[in-house]
Image (cartoon, rainbow, N blue to C red; front, side):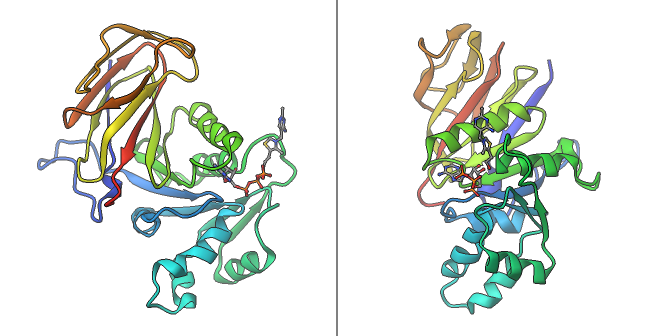
Length: 263
Ligand SMILES: Nc1ncnc2c1ncn2[C@@H]1O[C@H](COP(=O)(O)OP(=O)(O)OP(=O)(O)O)[C@@H](O)[C@H]1O
Ligand SMILES: Cc1ncc(C[n+]2csc(CCO)c2C)c(N)n1
């Protein structure tokens, strides 16, 4: 079984190459999706790492309203020009008209899918990235989603559902406090902890289906061919003990880890 490696190095100001030699995996490219919740403090950092920046509907209001406040010594208009979304997509019931007009004048692409009331704005944005030009090599693409957690529980669960709907894409849901991604059962996973920005609290959660057997290394409470299911044992309030965590499971699992306040 192939090994999939994971790392939150996108939370570092400059992303180190994966290894000192040339035989490591190719570097990831990042896309950013901004949802309609308060921007996390590291939003400008992720924006600068990303090659493609989308706003899900009212997420564009957040960029327009909140980015200038993150650069209090700069002219708000300059900041808004610097943080111009490439695409705003959704059902457009939250995007304010003056925000839309501002970004249209800067060249942002607006994709109105108000006819689709069966998928969320995040789903629409992920589908856009999936279907976007081959310039973005999907196998090396990691989609960072900010504003995904905290707030309305129906939205949070909808966001987790998107991880399962697009399980062949690497998607990371972020809030100010933690991040979440899916560990597909098709791979053995190596999670390389970046101790300066994340940990120690973590969890492994079988949200889509029970797991008959999960084995981990590197955690305070490791699992050894352990069964996990909702209503039974799930691994919450666990702690990372080593800088490399391995996970092998017969089910897709959610991995979550806390983000340090100093990030
Ligand atoms: N409180 C929240 N918690 C988590 N995610 C959120 C929250 N609010 C919005 N989102 C995310 O941001 C996206 C865009 O938000 P927006 O408010 O524009 O959606 P919406 O379709 O108008 O929602 P609704 O009509 O249900 O209020 C949503 O699809 C969702 O993924
Ligand atoms: C069974 C069922 N439940 C809820 C909705 C409503 N809904 C789900 S996604 C969405 C778009 C939000 O931007 C809306 C309105 C539905 N269609 N089907």
